Image (cartoon, rainbow, N blue to C red; front, side, top):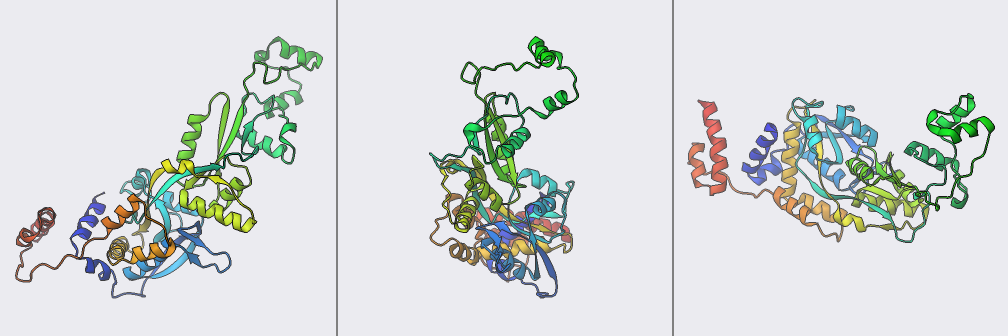
Length: 410
């Protein structure tokens, strides 16, 4: 946390025009920074399958920030699995991860001095999004996403439900039958007697091959139901989906979270009626559903009502000091400069035409737009004296940093 505090104080005291141009080093073009680029995070950043080029707000921000920091950019496509491996273990060895990565305390601990990848750190927050889920529009029939389990499904696991769904694929829901669990099949195949817990009726069935009738689920037996919820692997939505699934799974309901390799796959599963909930960033979900509907020439009905009470998702870039020790600081200065001179505002307007910023996002843009300020008077050479001509709020910070410089000089 100490380097982060130092950077914020340093950035707050610099004149804004210095933030814009100081990051442009004399070595522009002499060093190459490897940038891992997310290929499936539309509308923020994605790869065009026809041209293999990259698009999106984050792509434009990354390319401009790397240039202002004084480096050439080498782009490497990153999928969700590679992204997770880089964040967890540093695998891939990128100088910058160009991806809407949510800042979490768990990731910050992993980036700390005693964490798994201490040479990684977050850039300033550059976007605030809304994390939530969507569900099928009311009236939509999706028996493969949620419904009642047939008789015989006493206490199945999610894996058994998935295998059962594969088995009844193509059949009508009213014809679906449950099949014996793998354990029951194994017990029948080796000829061993049923366990004592099965009681006298179980022994009779084993001994005399009797077919015992079962009462229907409507005759005092609680109907068991299932539901599949999907999320993109490695995203912060995974934790939300799993926690809510655990909380809502009860005796009569089994909720099975399912990981998807990409938003494209998640949108396909949802629009095909195989997911009862689709978790993720709301804007990414909208873009993924729109893309699938366009490619499949169909209309994917989704209810975005739950998205109104979603979670706060602060997005940042992840930068590395592994190859260039000052690279994170250069990128930070470049980003603050881009907010101050209106570059980020113009890019946002271009990529989200007509969109109104949320209250959180508008506040973030104002905070990151550090005011221009002015240079200290030339006749004041002692930094300890200069701070007394500053406003009170700035005076305290200036006195703190100036005193530290003064002590170091002594």
